Length: 225
Ligand code: ADE
View (cartoon, rainbow, N blue to C red):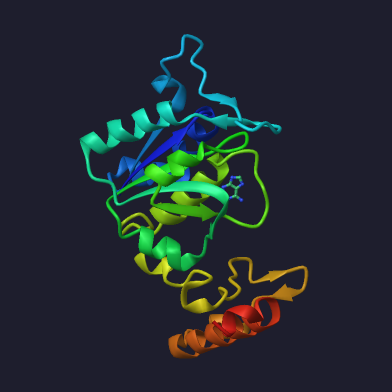
């Protein structure tokens, strides 16, 4: 899995991919993340990449030329499955979308900033538009980081225990059950005895019941999907 992220604030993303599971995934060769600075594709002597909106109104708009150059450069090197624009008016991200995207080979994630990108970028280059929730961030970088993280952890070999992604919340439309570790007792609060019983089938059953109960309480909408 290769993910190319196009942004005008690359430093916002650099450290995110340099730690923990995402770093290990790259070190082991399961995933490659490349971050591209839109400014490197500007031909303007001030390296500017945005301009005022035609028709007026507050806020700057990212111009099409540097973004087009960057995307075309990448597409000349390899075929991309999707060019994804992160935007609050995109399709709301859900686990099912992440599952499908994790089966791809090469993805481009494009981050907006200010008032967003010139509409022609969306019309000509973007194949999918994704929002990470109904709120507005100051740029698409955090959204791209969220999406890339959710995708990369599903790539086979990235998680130590391959089954652990299967028991995540939202797989099967159920929230994950509670988990416990040592100590057995903290200030009088004990771990449920069933988890120490050694009885695998009963433990599985208990976890399933807990998942259903938690989902009914917190996210009944998931049970009706
Ligand atoms: N850019 C700004 N807000 C966003 C959101 N909620 N999702 C995706 N990209 C965004």
